[in-house]
Figure (spheres, rainbow, N blue to C red):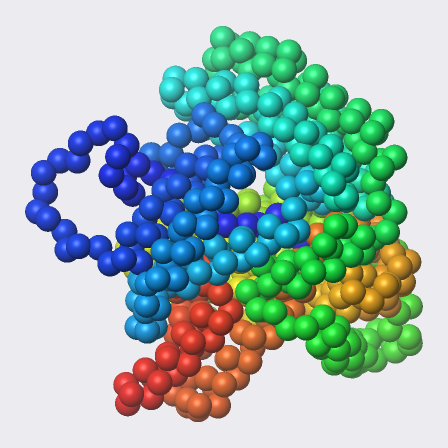
Length: 584
């Protein structure tokens, strides 16, 4: 699993005129195009609205003293601005110079604005209460990377911490209105939330992390005061609200259609995550076909290396047999560290450009220790590494099989490589493209990267290949399960049983995964849909170019324009193929 991802945008006053300072006299620049001007304005506004993202991406000049305004009043004002931007964008002719700054900016703007406007039907802000999608799964991590190195940074930290209680109370207000309006998260996905939120309370709370990274007694005392006087009461208020009010009224039906306008919302959410919109029945059938193909790979490996037998029985065995699990938490961590070192050494075989930023592996903090792995971004200048968090608890129940495939999905050649290169593109693309994200491209690339790692010889032995096929099978099963739950009346147990038969993931992880698909409709389809499109485009390029096909150049093209959509990637690769032909 990867961390919840959306448009990652952080602003700077340098991007637009009107920040309270006069610009120095310089040689006049050429007049910006209409697309460039709109992208500048939109980016600056989005970054102003999402101030914490400057911290997450480590952008130069970003302030670190505010949180996202999650009130419904702020959302209404934002939606009015979105409508105006979209109208202006649609009045501009679409650029046809594929790969140019304007072409990239126009495509990303059109997808982001159009999809956000369409998604209003879903009223997502009123029902994000689940253990997978709630604020407590993302906001706390901000304070692990909150800068504290200067006196100004410490002042900004205190100001930001003082806003946490208001942020939490806004979430309560939004969820309360959701219950009144026919929107809720499914009860089964919310039951663990009170304990998850209360686990943020304690001497090792992540909200106290800024005070542990600097020797400043006065600062530490101030952090602790805000934490004890404001944040702890707010955390308890939220947990009590979920426990005493929300759970009793949350919907029992797991399908999104149980929400107001839920049936109409589902295809909109699929489009928002994937940037394409195949019908649910087509997605479901594609998943069934991919499962059959992947099980053929499993069958061949089990027969050759593990003595044959039923696939489903072997997939259960790899989570329990000491031959395939770990002896200690340190062993879990070291296995991934060793795999990461091997991946770094192999990347030049498949890429001409590599990111400046490093990536490291760390155990999950206690409040999120049950996660299955997630990546947090490096900084734009490459000075702060990306972080891949992994679960190390219960090592004797943690299978070695999928450790490497997950690692390569999240680090090299997956999320870290693609995301860090995007951040480091500089003037080649508008900042909008460097900071943007969509799951169809991003998760599709990461899943493709698992297969690429196999091509590069990074899987150590047959059990690692079983893990690869298991993880690929899980992503195929997601196509079947997500559409099954939200459009075909599948029960939770039906989804669990299907996933148990399709992947080697542990029963515990599968239970969590199914709750994730229930809580986060549509997102799970993005991985396999995106990977299949990248694979299709690579096969097309190989067929068209023959001996002239250069894998390094192909990959550099795929990741070289930032967070583009899948239709934009299609157009980009077709143009690249023609450029390679013309180059002869």
